[in-house]
Image 1 (tube, rainbow, N blue to C red):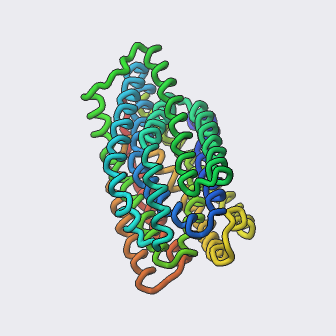
Image 2 (image 1 turned 180 degrees about the horizontal axis):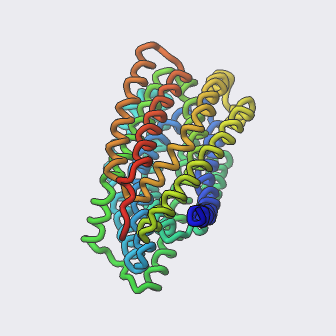
Image 3 (image 1 turned 30 degrees about the vertical axis):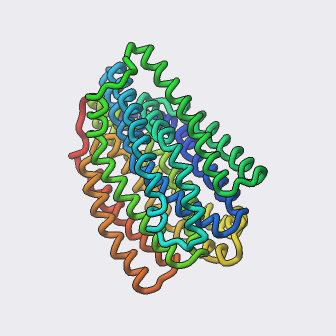
Length: 439
């Protein structure tokens, strides 16, 4: 009993130390993206819909590479737990080079395909033209975005979430200021919003590169490209890539279904998705702590502390998600006004926010367990589980289309997906197969 209590206290201290600054860093991004929506909303419903489509496409391209952060966090944290700091930094440097290479490749592929990508969503002509403009400009910032992902993963793996907090707040505050300047003052339209994001992300990437280069020098780690290390980093991320692609398929299908409902439902869906993302990032603060702690404790061979910390984080996830759900219910009447939404968009948004609020307790458990299993390096299971849960969602989304259901029905279909994720992740976490120790 004494051992269990001590382990729980240690886990709680570590969770707080990592989760609190991680919360600030994670929440900063969607808050400033919501500010972008508020600014672009002044350009009208068509511009807001264009931002929703182009933003979904861009984040899909970038977020499929989230393994650059998650995989790096787990790998670096394991080496930290095993006491090999030079090896930890070396894996981080390889991750940065891989991020830069993938970013350049995305520009080369995405620029000519931008009109076709937007066309897949079935947008109206007025929305499509602005969406292509935003997407093409924003693609120029993908190398910076991916370097930020990799740099964030390195520092989290090193048990440092304070620096990502500072960089996130600084870069996204700059993003909001530049967007306001370019869109509202200089009248560049939706292109101004895209250029503001590109410039702010570039500055954030420079900061991460400087921090990692300094750590490499301290531990006498070379920073030149190592093809073998870059290849290993890419190979290790394949399973997480599959996991993320499956998740993005769900969100892309949801946006495509909303697009076919009309411009007003599409705009409401875009805002609701950003609110969902804000709440998800808030809950992900615990998941980020879970990645770093699980990697370190398993690397050090401490299964008991891993289990104890996981139980604590799940309890916290449920508690925080209930609070966030209640907050959405209370703020429903005022949220549409923050985005300058017209009456039709506002009516759609107010209705769907009920579902967003009700799904929060499910999300609280799902996000925490996802982070814990990522930290454990249980990548193959996560890939299979994501594929299965996506297959559970697609028939529900198809039923919405066939029945002519509205936005509320679409978000209930997303609830089917979240329930499937809870079932698969909960079953895995209950077992012992993921508790693999050592570096």
